[in-house]
Each structure stands twice: as C-alpha cells, then as structure tokens.
Length: 366
Image 1: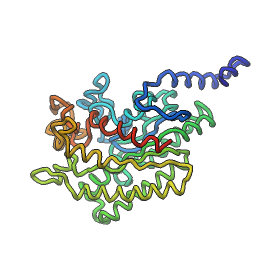
Image 2 (image 1 turned 60 degrees about the vertical axis):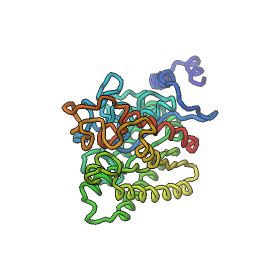
Image 3 (image 1 turned 180 degrees about the vertical axis):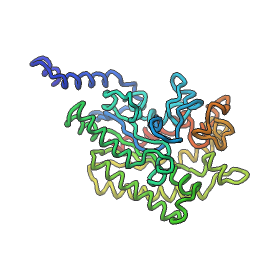
Image 4 (image 1 turned 90 degrees about the horizontal axis):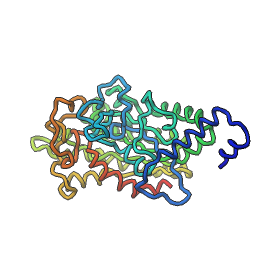
C-alpha cells in the first residue's frame, strides 16, 4: 500500500519503479505451497550452500570435470534438459522452494542469464564436489564454502541495488538457509584419495570438518542469516560407488565409512547446540538425513523400490558425472531405483526424504 501511495502522490524514480515491478513479479511467480506457514510468518527466499546434492547448475560455469550438464542427466527434468543438476530431475534445492510455495526451481547464482527478480526469492550457491575441507574443493576445482560465502556477499550487494537496504535486511533475516555438504570430504578426500590420511586419523579429520562447518555458520550469521538448516552427512558407506570401492565382492555397506559419518554428525550436532546458545536470536537447526536415508536403503522394498545398491545409470556400480553419459544405457524404470547414479539419489528418492524433513523441521526455523 505504501508503494501505491507513493506512485499516486508523486512521479516515481526509475529505481523505485524497477523495485516495484520486481516485487510484483515475485508475487505473481509463486507456486502452490505444499506446507502451510504459521500466521504472520514470512519466508521470502531460500538460499543454499553446499555440494552436488544441492547444486542446480553452478558447476556449468566452472573449469571443472565435476559436471552433469549432459544426457542422461536431466532425463526427467522439465523438457528433458540436462541443467547441471546431478540427478534425473529436481534436486532438494528445487523441492524445498517448491514445498514452501516460493517458486518451482532454485536457480544457480553463477548463471549469467539470472534475472534480478530471482534474487528476491533465493538462489543456489552450492557446487558439486565441494566440502567443509578446503582441499576437497581444490581437488575438484569447484567452489569452496569460502568461495560460496564471497558470492553470497556479492549477492547481498546486488540485492541492495534492486530493493534497497531495508528490504534486503528483511529478506536475509527471514529467509531459510540450507548448508548441505561433508559427504565428499569423507567419501573422496579421506577414504578414496587418502590424501588426508597421512596427517589425520578419523577423529582428527572430523574435527577439521566440524571446525570448518562452525566457522562457516558463524560467518553467514554475521552476514545476516538467522534461519539456518544444516543437514548432516548421510550413510556414505551405503552409496553404490562406496560399496564398489570398499564393500568387497558382495558390495556391502562399508561400516567404517558410516561410522565416520556418524562421528562427524555427533560433533556437528553438539557444535550447533553451542552456536544456538551463543547466537540467541538465531535458529540453527540440525537436520538428520542419515537415518531416514539408511532406513530407505535398508528397507527399500517397503518404499516401493527394487534396487538400492546400484544406480540407474550404466552398470550402476561406479558411473557418476562424466562417466554417466549418453553412451551409457539407463534403467528402464528409474522409479524402481533409490539411486540415479552411483553417488546421487533419484528425484523420487529426494521427494521421499526431503518433503517429510521440511514438514518435520520447518517449525524449528520459525
């Protein structure tokens, strides 16, 4: 109403008109929410940091081999387009904004065609191959969390240029942030490449990870984030690629890998509790994905799946990113598979996991 009064009382400036038009675009582009927010609660945007689970295409614009912007990725995405999502369809980033009724897809921040109107409702900074350990990102030549933080600072500056400082503070302070990473640190940097095993045992390496996580959460808090969800590390020992590399001839879940994930998760949960005590005006929420995914893998038939130890792409035991390409056949019915490739779940699996988690944990953010 205030904007309408300004429009009627005096000729508006071009900058004011631009802001007004962008706000109208945001309102008109919302999708039907799957979850109802409490009265007088606003979630204007979703902002995501992390790795390939959440990446919606940032790696397309980096000089890295950690890419997925080619078939058969995107097989079940709108228009069957490979967008750089490490999935057959939508990622959790997309499902979260859709469930909240904000928009259908969360765009990658690095997209050169990103519209200013998208800034108002959130973007994705996640980069496939990233981790809490800075070395993890260096190995894959992708955005580290530090890089993602720098881009977030740039985003804040752009947002101020579009809607002004007051509205920017409101958007940042009331948005929901998600941090989803850590799997590549353990599965690849520690257990597969073993480069960190020369100087760290598992307890000390998980300390390195959790200290990095804590520092990052403090940094984005200082930049204005107040509602932050942090997903723990899933049971990486049960990923098809990890079964292949460390599960023996029978390709069993690698308990040593899962134990490392659980150790990190317990430390992360304690540090998040400490941060909430330190920052009383914040709501940093520890979100457990480990046990829901483990249950789905262990009891896959209960959830309507037929295959839980292989991905849909190629043989399903090792193919991921560049090795999952148009030369590889895909399974005839992806809905029967827990995993899309040897590392990433299918869109259907994400839906079974993420939507209930949002419904379970959302009230803790608000």
